Structures are given as structure tokens and as C-alpha cells.
Image (cartoon, rainbow, N blue to C red; front, side):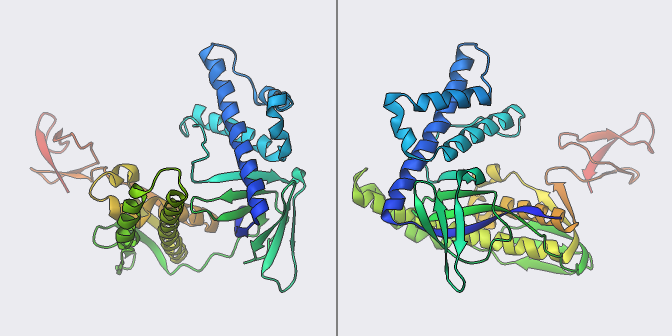
Length: 364
């Protein structure tokens, strides 16, 4: 059974192509913000919320106005996709799966534009060449560093500019799933540690400790130097932009190290075990505590998401255990073990000790 996957490549546009992509990113941001404005104005004025089809028609007419002719100089497909993405964001917000969408700015680190198959892009790769070429409408052929062949014709491609100034292209393709590796253990339990990255206990009784990454701590000295240098620069100057880009490159390197460790560890854990048990952690809350650096280096949420995806793909079982759920409690008088109870419960009635007797529950 084919699965939908993303194939990412590094892009190297020329100076003219970078300027054209910058205009395209600006038009996509403008379409996104315009869509949010229309929805908010209708809500403020207590008017019926317009549908996506109605707003798409309005935006087509909006582009024809004399002061908006600059929107016609770029491809219309990515702007239409920006409207669709805004509609999807509102749908998820109404379904309580995410927060309400926010406005996009040119100062945001990530800029992107999505082309669909109907937009007429073309991908070619010459044999024994390290480059592949992506031809985009009104931009031209953009060089991509070839790393692997596309398994099928892509349904869409997203061109991105990252915070560190690099460019990339992400293709959505259909690929055959890989054969799952043969499991070596029946199950394992994983606990995030403070001194170590994680502790893994296998079903046969063996234990393993994963060494911490400490990518952020190793880069702290460089980050402090860049922060001091950025504070001395005048905002908006060329030197300010250079220092800001250097800081973004350093953070991108840290993120790549975390992602590499999380993905490799998740592949090994999901491949070697038939069932994987992990604790649920509020990563957003832990980052604000003294454990912030340890949790950030662990990339725990990235690791758990990857384990869930691989277990679903390979037919394995991923078990999430509530970290703050109390274990079974034992009666202090007769030793009867009762089920889990909330943390605020300190006394409970023991069925074996009598109907009216109350025993103090202690954690087992």
C-alpha cells in the first residue's frame, strides 16, 4: 500500500530567482493576511461568515484593482494555495485541534509558497549529475542538490526560505513503504532522564542509557557572543542582518543535531521492539522550568511523534502512559491494593476492611 511522503532537497536559486521568490513569498503572505481580514471583519460586524469559494472569487476581483496590479506579476497558484491553507487553519481551530491562525510577517523566519500540479511546474534530472532542476512559472529553473530519485510524480512542491537564509524544496509523492525490520524484543519502556537523555528497559530485563546530546549547551558560548554583537548593531543595518543570519544558522545547526538524534533513536526503538511504552510529558511546561535545556536537547516531542508514525507504519504498538497518573494504592491495614486514584485523594474506603472503615492510601 502506497503512503504519502515528503522528499526534501536543498535549493540554490540565482540572485534574480531569489528576488522573484521574495516577491512570490510576499504575495502569499498578503493573500493569507487578506483572508484573515475578511473573516475577522465579518465576525466583528456580525455578518454571515463567507465561504472559501466566495472569498476566492473576491480575491480574484481584488487583484484586478489598479493598486493591486503587483499581485498579477507572480503566479496565481501559490496565492490560491495560501487561501486554502488559511481555510484549513480556521477549520482546525473550530474543531478545537489548534489555535486560531495568526498574521504572517516578512520578518518571520520561514517563508514558503506551494505549487500544485496544475500550475505547470516541471522536474528533471540528468543522469550521473549531482543537480536536479525545478522549473517554476515566472521564476525559471531552480537548481536542487540531488540526493535521491523521486519515487513517483509529485503532486505538489513547496519552495521554502529558512531563517538562516537557505532555500529548500519539499515534494509530496507516493512511495512504497519499506519492509519493517524484525523485532528483537517483545516490548520496551522509555523514561526521559536528567543525567542521561533517556533510559530504556527491555522486556528481557536489559537496560540501556542514551547519552545526552547537549547541543544547546555546547553552543551557549557562541550564542552569548552573537547576542552581545547583535545588541551593539543598529537595527536595520547590514551588519545587523549579518549577525542575525549567523545566529539563525547556529540555531539551525542545533535543530538539525536534535532532529538527527531523535529520528535515529526513534527508528531503532520502533524497529527493535514489538511494543513501545513512553511517558506523556508536557514539554511546553517543562521548558519553562530548570529542566528547560535538558528537555530541549532531548527533543522529546519530536521523538515520540516519530515513534508513533513508525509504529503505525510497521504494525507495532505505541503505548503512552500518563506521567502524572498515580499508581495503585495499598491499604495500610490489610494490604488490599486498589486501583489508581487522583493525586488529591489521601484517604479512601477499603472494601476488604469493612464498609465503614477508612484506610489511608499510600503509593505502592
